[in-house]
Length: 558
Ligand SMILES: NC(=O)c1ccc[n+]([C@@H]2O[C@H](COP(=O)([O-])OP(=O)(O)OC[C@H]3O[C@@H](n4cnc5c(N)ncnc54)[C@H](O)[C@@H]3O)[C@@H](O)[C@H]2O)c1
Ligand SMILES: [Zn+2]
Image (cartoon, rainbow, N blue to C red; front, side, top):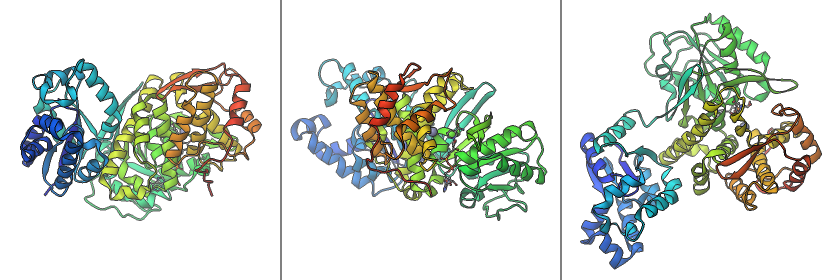
């Protein structure tokens, strides 16, 4: 018996019509929760609302959700609010993928217009304003589910879209355009084994990974190695032309993001006899991606490049935008190149082995993306529990699905920015939100503070600076600090880091323009502004103000 397929979404998005068509296409039983409630109560939804009250109706919904969670092989169309209840969502979401149908407010009104009297939530004046208001208020809650737009599509087409998503294992493809063409960022589960096909690799290739990620995940790319440092544990059918692919393993960690590592990797590629028709496949976090990308950009003046990010940070941040490079003894990322990948394959299932504090650190960049441009993303961070042990991802389907839609949303924010500014000449500066302070914290702590934690402190500091300069409401810094704490991230700079030293370190950041410090400031969640005229005194005042140990204390790298 296959999983259930759950449809949710606002009224008038066609859940019942589409659900029926979908069930017919999939050859399974269709259940509409409202119909079930009406049948059992012996009266209409409107009558139940009127005579028993909304609370009783919600209780009836909860009973139905619990009951259906015990069954499989169904297509379930749910009442518009049923899946907004966390218990209902947990129960039904564990039984199969959840799609959220959406539609333009005007379409919703046209579609429900005929039966508006049966829709208790729409009775009253100004129904369109009411619809917009409700959609706005539910946006974050609905955003955790896989979106399917229905406006401009007949119900048959919507069912077709869902069938296609199911057939593609629910992978989500986010196209990224750049001056030389475009590539897809694919977000999904168990993607690694499909990388050679998805990337269209039909010639020689090499996997570059590190000594932590390689043993855990390299075999999944299903390539047979040939005498390099990793044993072949690949399973499944070997594709002709893809066997014998070497796995080149670098030591894990930022301190190996160096030209020495690059040189060793060049040697590995030469030893393997790889020519200009080769593809470099990076498998790992941002360090591996940056190093392997630089190798791909420069080996024989450039070979094809595929990225398989395995940290949250690498998925939402470093894998998008084409920046690659290595550190020099005098500073981070001082040597590099732009190198666009042919494909980015972000396998949510690979995050299950990530250490918890790496996961949390990655959440700082997700939060940054919400603050830059996506209030709904920020609301989702606040509404759901993201302080999780990544190991839960191995066996919790709803959690993986939630994380997938979150990661995809965060990727879109970065995609939109880098498409506008592929070579970092302007708009990309917005991505430095929290990073001017954050880099200083990293540097002055001697890199004892993790990047994501430093960024979190930087986001809080940026919020305080924004408030001090009158760019945002005085309550915004508290909101940002509380949000970071919720994610398990520190919002205060440890007192042992001297404000004057931090201030000096900011001046040496390479993002400085024409001698003046540029700050990305927050006007509101999802709305930022860049200012070049921030007085040094205001920055110093903020550095003094955000010192302190508030839980959770930053963990230090060993
Ligand atoms: N190119 C860009 O645009 C860009 C943007 C942001 C950051 N970066 C760079 O990214 C780097 C940081 O990336 P990061 O945070 O991913 O660090 P990382 O690559 O060092 O990974 C963190 C640790 O997690 C391990 N790891 C990775 N994936 C794992 C998995 N699935 N299971 C178990 N262990 C796993 C790694 O081996 C490493 O020890 C920095 O060097 C930074 O400069 C680049
Ligand atoms: Zn960052």
